[in-house]
Length: 170
View (cartoon, rainbow, N blue to C red):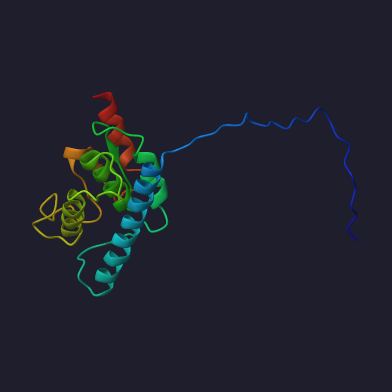
């Protein structure tokens, strides 16, 4: 029969309670973040539809569910900051493109015209079309553009680590 036994406490236990930290983001920035998260999610959903129709040549790994992390972390970067990503990197790529090319905007006031160009060129690259950032040669697995600081996605697990380490040393 299993026995339940109370163990004596050894030592002193502490509970750490952080000082109250209040962060208030302005409404326009929150709207921009939500807009970009939703836009990336919709982009990925449409991309998977095209893949199911057999129109995407090569692999296509979705990043659905990871958009918030990409948008939130990349908003802290400058245009000159360099990123590399994994084989599921569409969300990093798009978030970096939006931040680098468009800067701050409030989508309730006006959506920048450049968003559509970024989405079309990214889709063309993933689809293997000449209108893509790398003329369709990079596809989903090697999606990159140095103009806005994205060295590219990488099909190798942790393959971006040596690449960005080299950039940091350079």
